[in-house]
Image 1: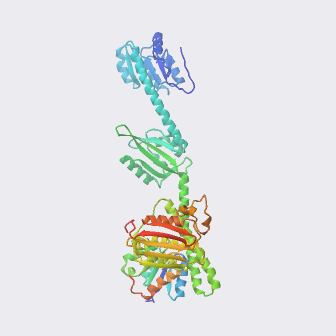
Image 2 (image 1 turned 180 degrees about the vertical axis):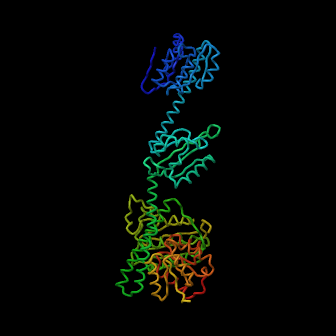
Image 3 (image 1 turned 45 degrees about the horizontal axis):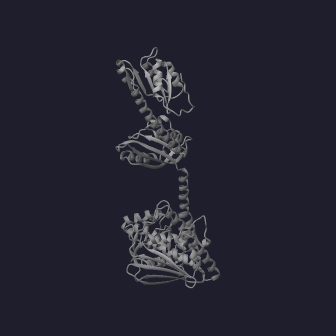
Length: 483
Length: 127
């Protein structure tokens, strides 16, 4: 008798052949011998059970007529042990009267009666082994995907078409500490944060109904009782005919990202309100004192306070702008009819270094706030980068019918040709630019984004003789949100 | 009725007082309100300023809330409002809320005074 116990991890599926007639057993093992299966033989029901306790079996071929325990009794007994419960069975019998009983046995996949035709048996087993190998591969690749996903701190799960749990999800149980029964009976929302629950359930139901993928960010309870931010996703799995088979879902831990986001919101809020207000009052009060004195010994330092304060204001603006642009929320325009000259007057108020020249019609349909930013960024940039005793010349030319041109000219040191391509680029924090001491290096980047949003163009020209000129051309009708 | 002053509605006391002082330096009388609620109380009690300088972002009743209340009341709607804000979109916000005009924060003293003088000299003409 062969007892091929094999290695501890059963690489090959085993077929268990049970019968009390020695020559039949011998004939069948010879017939079914192949290098991708292990053949186990048992001469009685009891021996079969003993083997099943030792290793898993993929298929059992059982003689119905046996002394002591017959084939059907063995099938009953197999139900009582873990490894026997799901084993498919081919019954072999010499009498046709056993047929009905065979069909009562749910695990019976086949039935051979009378003298066994070797080719038929061989063929059936071969078909079964092929199928079983495919199933194994499938299970293995599924297990690999699962462990990959789970190794990433994620949970994977399946749901039936109606959203009820398809099977157990050890990873979801591990992530949330949910009772396995609660998961299986569809009470997963118990571990969703109560504030997120209505929104999560509503979007999930909608996905179920429309059979569309689901994607939601919400807080899940962890085994310790605290909550973690997670991204839940679910996609419909369709069969070949396009019918919904099940839903595959996962949860990814996004807590670190969420924390970074809320920190950024906090910082943005501080920039927006807490820092700007005191700065506004410092600048207001300084201007009031400046207006009360004719003494240049007092006025000069006060002007320095104002110019430094204004530089700080601009940096705050740029930081806020860059968060907006970075967030990819884009630049939304609200064009209204506006005169570029009056916007420029607001920019230039209080700046005595700037000479303004205007020609033609300066009316257009632009976003008044963005237009202010474009003009202010270029003028401030020109003032910041040129010697304090020199003038900045600003020209607004509205003589063309379709567009208005703004140019800002200063006596800045030459912008070196090798830096030219980078002038409008967002600064890279990992390689700080040398001239960053006067600002953040964000002004021109943001200005270009605003000009492009208006459908305009921006460029510059820099020579040692003439200084630097930035030129912006804006079409008179900017496309954008109708206001 | 008392001579029509300018009403400055601003929750930050330092900014509010600086604006009132700056206007006082050029002979313009201004009174302050520390929030939207207080401003509406003054208006409902019969104060009729020539213009309201109104901060947009305030805790409690904001500048936007005041403008919405003003729109619903014809006597208040007749008073011009200059919206003050550091918000980059102040121009668009002012138009959306029906403010007469706007000033960007930090406020340039020169612009503050020319704007205030415009209303002080011609109290009837503005919408």
